[in-house]
Image (cartoon, rainbow, N blue to C red):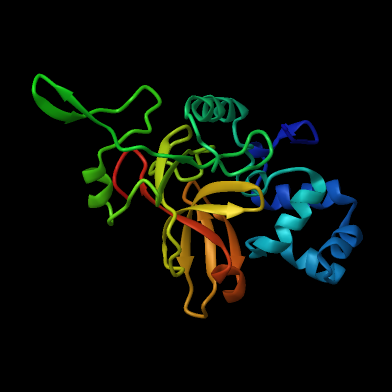
Length: 239
């Protein structure tokens, strides 16, 4: 879905302007307060310049307005053409049944598959046409990953440019791990976003996009601990 505010694409608005457009889309300050269970004054305070906005509360408002949290943070929606590419790859994977479900246009997790090929008497590794085959030795060298613990996805936006470009393949470690600062594929509602997570001294965390330094979501300790995190280990380069 492509959202526009007053005829202007979301990426041409500031983060604060997108916030107030979100409030307008859900029916105004009073209705937004009802949706998140907060006072109207809290809604207004979240709209102040540079204010931190709790991610879980912003997600409720985004779901009500039928926009993605990524739109609020960056002004961009996840590219629907990337979804078609990923689904085509999934269809080519016989027996694949562990694709993360979500609405059309959002990033999915897909399995990697180690592949070694014998050629001229020598065993070599190669990448198959769907770009998801790597050697078992390569996986093991990235923190003892295995085909059961590694997955890949396609970055849906430029939020982490230049580290991770839109459309780049990212390989992630899906094993449960403690919350610590780093680059992750983060599960937010039905979305999987490549973002930088910064652990805070109070046990909470901030979720940020490098390309949009003003757009940060705060996470209290309990929410940070319950966040679905997949550590990015490769996105065209080791991370």
